[in-house]
Image (cartoon, rainbow, N blue to C red; front, top):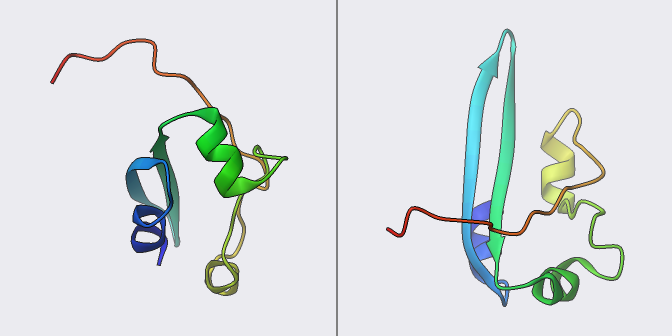
Length: 79
């Protein structure tokens, strides 16, 4: 549900879905790479630190963070 949608979002360069088991629950984390803050704003709206959670995801998640954090890439390994 998450990755196919993100791959179609303008300005989204890359997306990762991480998963880990925590006892009797499973935790998911999504990491996205966008071209710019403006591309994030175009996707998420003016309050671009508010999490964008689809209706489908809301139905299957027991909880989720309502706020997100954005970082700028400071360095890469050049690969």
